[in-house]
Image (cartoon, rainbow, N blue to C red; front, side, top):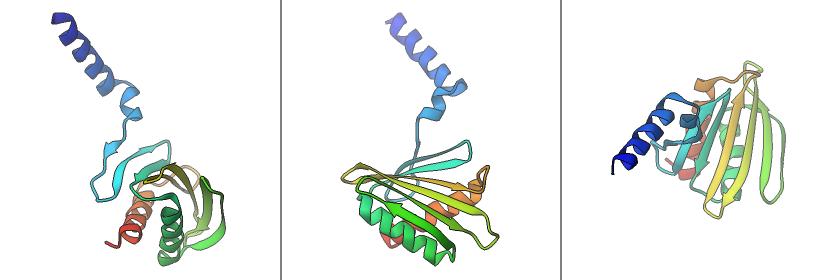
Length: 132
């Protein structure tokens, strides 16, 4: 029993202090989001939606945010969208099939990343995807 408690305490302390904490997604605060994380300039979001619905919603969100679409290309499991914001910052969005009801979206704004802008895109995509 003591070994189990020690193992749990050591594991928990590693998760709080080391890189292991970066492996786990935070719990989604909004409907339709399984989890998300921001790491090294990239926001990664898991949406509870089919791949093609997420792809279409991403293009619509880009349009509604008045970004200039530079390129968009996809196949049956993944795609990439490149756009420019009004301040000419590059926006790169990747959409990737995870399962029939889960899609991973990664968002990078600018060269080094912009957390606030990425989260605004994440929220706009959630609104378009789930009509909220």
